[in-house]
Image (cartoon, rainbow, N blue to C red; front, side):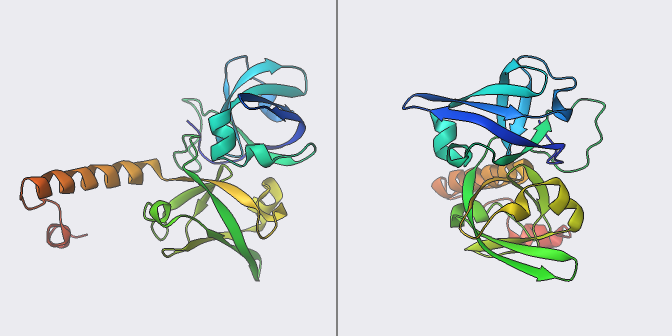
Length: 219
């Protein structure tokens, strides 16, 4: 489990992929201080397992499913990546719950400056956007951010100078692909409600949680 608070920017030393598997080597310093073989590190929001480690680099294996479902397969040597170690029990919870299991990818549509911040607009699948709410949490390439706008085609986040300096988000270009993971709690709630609705519809039973119920209970 991760929090979406990026600890360090790593640099791709080498990345290989064939029809069955892949391997990635990343140069880093801070995150290797207490990292051991088998530990998990989020690379652009993708949970990877350390298979080899040296003084200033680590290696992780990549499944083909990961390459297909994320932007890791589009990385090149010398590209920067967002890195975060799995959280410990004593860690401060500065972001939100991030599993490192990417839901889908999005495409950057626009950057727009507003005083000291930059608005980033990202297009994503409509089904994925249903998991998002205004002011809710979203992980973009592993970065914990707040949803500032969402409709059925795009969502937007606002990037402050600190986030700019500590992550890769504003080093991207329009058209670049980013990894997306929506709030895991919201996904579970939506799944349970959808399942409850389908089961009740099959039984011709009125759903116990509907708009009327929510209004009556202060939502």
